[in-house]
View 1 (tube, helix red, strand yellow):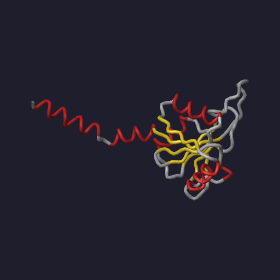
View 2 (cartoon, one colour):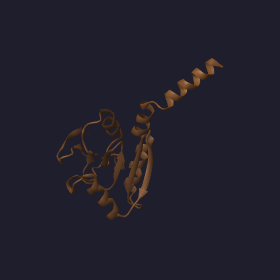
View 3 (tube, helix red, strand yellow):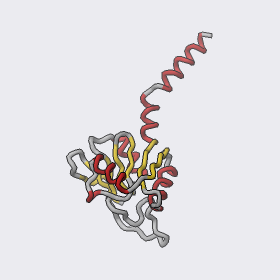
Length: 151
């Protein structure tokens, strides 16, 4: 009986520990996208293939634009879809590895952005294998940006 009580207490501590909340926070992402955008759907698949649990909100363009503005994403850093994870905004075709790094490092920032829709970024793969170099930007709370990753 005593061992069962110890086991139950340990299990309760384990399940309520911050590491479990952090794991869930690191893997659950919510996306706002157009219901007809194929590249957005491919980006969602990229996230799922890399261990994320994705909640998709198919929304009108005006709703997505409003979410971008409220999140602090300026037009020059905008793309076709917007996501939220762990209090951060993810704008555009940001690779899953960069999102994981953001959440792990937890910088004081708004989030990440890949402006426009670069060929070869996740969801924007070209059938020929063509790619173009692109940067992932760390969007700071004052609206400035700095390089987070280059691909």
